[in-house]
Amino acid sequence: MQILDGKLLSEQIKAELAIEVDQLKLEGKKVPHLVAVLVGDNPASEVYVSNKIRSCEQTGFRSTLIRRNADISQVALLQIVHDLNNDPEIDGFIVQLPLPKHINEEKITLAIDPKKDVDGFHPVNFGRMAQGLPAFLPATPYGILEILRRNNIETAGKHCVVVGRSNIVGTPISILLSRKGFDCTVTLTHSRTKDLAGEVRRADIIVAAIGIPNFIKGDWVKEGAVVIDVGINRIVDTTKKSGFKLVGDVDFDAVAPKCSYITPVPGGVGAMTVTALLMNTMKANQKEIYS
Ligand code: GUN
Image (tube, rainbow, N blue to C red; front, side, top):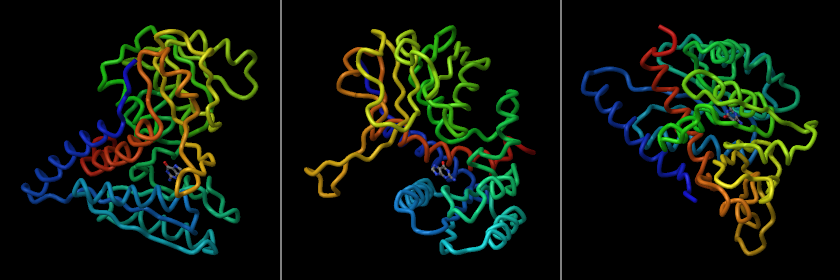
């Protein structure tokens, strides 16, 4: 069994991006500029956004954090999005989710110019991705593809079972793995799937993205399977100073001995997600997706 080290891979990719940034500077060109909009004080969002800003600093990207109180009106937030869409100094931006209940997340996402949508959440990017056209890919699926690609994991003709059908992970990774280049045969499973354990048992590649701690059990996994664990779940751990620890959607101790490769939590897919956002921001800067 081999651990797929997302942290190490993300450091490698960030080092590659930093070289590209240095080259842009040498040529007197603008470095990539990412803006993050953070509304309210959700603790998980605070952590995610500060990781994004820190990763920008590490790689030499410009970054700007726009913070607003949770009581900002939808109109005022839409105005911020509009201004960012029209600011030529900004290559890409994200509005961190979740947003307060009085704000319609769909409206905000739809207001983002697809050319600056480095989260890949806008339906234009989703549609382009589904048709195999150049698109900003959502960060987590993009990170998973890079883990598979850069570890030379064979995907063609393999049976991939995705557990969970969210718009930002399960559904897009199902589409991406089934497309030319990855060529998997994909089964997308969810809460209404009959005999979920039986479906997972047939998988050569398992992508677990259901958001339930330790959900995938040891006896659900075929010998030699590749296991990609997308879950980041906090569970109580009184031995930790913080009072919690992070676990994935896969029962790691029971599953790891059976598989050929597995991503750990933390240090697997999660570590790659921020790096994927930086890769998208570099693509926005280079006008690689939209000219
Ligand atoms: N909330 C949790 N993950 C994400 C993400 O990737 N992007 C944004 N904008 N919000 C999130």
